[in-house]
Amino acid sequence: MQTGELTISNRHDDLDLDMVYAFLSQETAWAQGMPRDTFERAVAGSLCFGGYVDGRQIAFARVITDEATFAYLCDVFVLPAYRGNGYASALMKHIFASPALASLRRIVLVTTDAHHVYAPHGFTALANPERYMELHRPDVYKTA
Image (cartoon, rainbow, N blue to C red; front, side, top):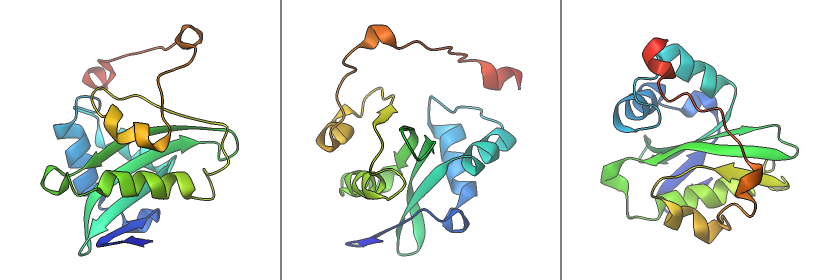
């Protein structure tokens, strides 16, 4: 799909895995220090989307899903030099319109500071946060 100058693809062969891995493992708090083999297993088991400008990947999003009822959106980023151009919004519109995700009952995500990116696409705070639980291991990559 082409949106203005942004091309979006969910083909694994189109992904610049070296760039995505470097950005996630070095520039994000949530994947800091992730081993490469962990990253590769995550990508292999997920529906991944890349955003491209002039043939260069500048955005990424990963969706963990059963493609029937539920999905977890994660690892979303636009490279800093390309932010502020509406690319994240275009990527979200494309993702949520994709046939594998358009009819899901629930899509969740976790964000520290990008609520403004997701709210226009229908995301809200949890209606019943007391129902959600987590097993969080923030140091797991340090022992891997």
